[in-house]
Image 1 (cartoon, rainbow, N blue to C red):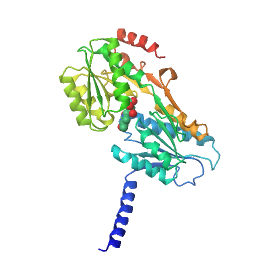
Image 2 (image 1 turned 90 degrees about the vertical axis):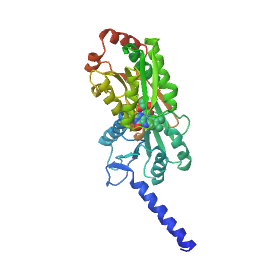
Image 3 (image 1 turned 30 degrees about the vertical axis):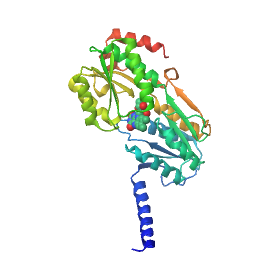
Image 4 (image 1 turned 120 degrees about the vertical axis):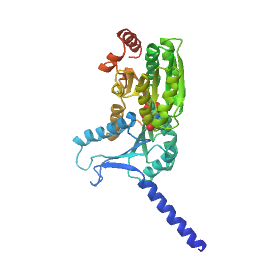
Length: 338
Ligand code: RBF
């Protein structure tokens, strides 16, 4: 093969590779096929929606905003939305986001998790017209990005407080998918602080799955925790939570959840669910964007007093699984945040 032929072959391979990478995206489009005239939105899920309520709520909130905006929008101004699931290989996310920007089709890319600002910031220089709405994330002062996140210190403290009141062994656990600054600096210390506020003898066992999908590893870690006497576990590990739940059912371990109402995951064993109202916040921020009201460069944190973090203490399964005396202590503690 001559040098020129080799170069051409390389080019063909590069094009094929890019095409393959693009086709690996799993996306679905609403209003696809209709003439594009209004604003166009891409929701990028950095992971998968199954077993990650924070992501399912992101997509649902953006879709709800588009639906309500389109209900009164004039013909020709109706918005379009496409949901793209990036998958659990984090090394692929920057390429996916670059492709979405390079397509030039989307007025805004909406996504969620604390690692997104770092991935999107360089893209705002490369694609100055591309806007980003990032939830569960913090970045102030970039005029192409707006961010909002939840007061995870409140969720973590309250969850630790319940765990501290409910443990009989003084050993509670936290199983995370991976270490990240919000986990190491806010959630883990908050959980420990809340637990110690309830019971100063409590020790926290902290273990790491290594990814957001491995249910087998989740079960192994939960089994090992139970074997060492842990009797309450907070899993924050996406699909790996399924393994933690299976292990908890086998060993009678109590469970606490973040993000959504998960009392029915193991009825009688789930003792707290602190919900983040990600659907509501995503809908609000998407509507602001569609109405041209976004304050670019801004960052806001929302907690219980804003109604965007909610300790669910009304579910019948909570009332059933947590004794009244303990529920009263929790209610008192909750007053401090509201
Ligand atoms: N939370 C999930 O529930 N599912 C995920 O797949 C997921 N992936 C994440 C990936 C990264 C890189 C980071 C930093 C966080 C991720 N989170 C995920 C955690 C999420 O931001 C949040 O902390 C938890 O959902 C608890 O509210």
